[in-house]
Length: 358
Image 1 (tube, rainbow, N blue to C red):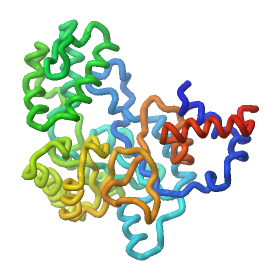
Image 2: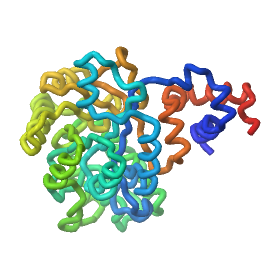
Image 3: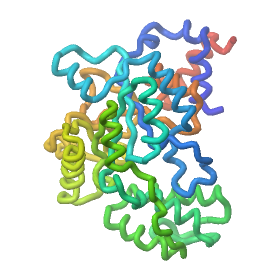
Image 4: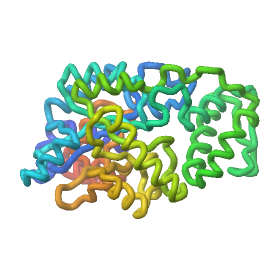
């Protein structure tokens, strides 16, 4: 059991809850959930990047049931209204978000959101909406999973060969390649991706991504039922690694395209692969100039009213392998659960207080 799962087990214990400080139990702040795919496929047999699966459908239903009972679920528009009317954020404000624009958001998540009357925001990578073009990370995963080669040398990454002899080894190689691609300049990344199919002796089937992404009809139907849409750029580049002209286009044009299709303002933006090292002050200034009122990163945490950057809001990642207990603990105790140092201190404090005696 991981330290986080152990901490979640302790914090979910009634005795532990009584021993925790009143300040912790009254934990405030804006929680923003970050999902990607809601998918029931077996990750071991998925042809694409299984790391993008955030939850199975039934797990997502249980998560939304908990969220509905315990938090004030709002949209970015609601948040903006609270601020402009100087009402302050709801006590336990929470926003549900999805990145990229996979169609399983419509098929699997949307009916559950409607069932519980929950708003959400889907950040669209507009160049893929209504298309059958693979996201670059899914392209990498597909090619590595389908090559007949048992090893490969990627000279740009390492001098030694990458093992492809087992499914586990291929997963490790995919993770290494994707990590590297997020560190390099856009030109280097595109050159690598263009050569990858040939390097691995794999031919991408025509229509391999057919139906994988939302269509504009899907987007419009969801919008009519209370789902909001934000921008996630056009092609999902790492924004700190692209030139000024592309940077401006990715941020401004994606907003214009969504507004053109939906006839409403797009006020929120999500930085692709949005750790703080993957966007910078220049990127943030362009986001502001393009008229976005909020932008979300992929750094973990809860935002504190009056002490947060509206153009770099943290989020709480939702991962497929986490238990419902861990999901609940992350939301109720974000300050303690979403930092390694705080998780360690949580265990020590609860243990010293006798919370292990259940």
